[in-house]
Image (cartoon, rainbow, N blue to C red):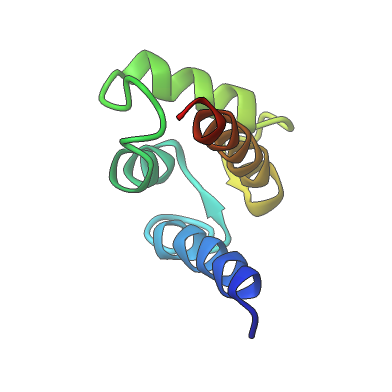
Length: 92
């Protein structure tokens, strides 16, 4: 596997590490998303301890408003975080 493929698999594995905890094993509840963000993205996303921030992120991701974030919906967060990281690298 290439380095990029390893990283892609890592994103999938992180998603599943949190999604299997409650309810549907292939979606994130708000609690699971909060745990993932606070543990895995605390240096990338500001105010991860603030419930209003988590609520807003969850609402933005849950496009079908079913109270769960699918992997497809989660990818929007990954894309946004990657764009921010890319911009920050060029600022340094």
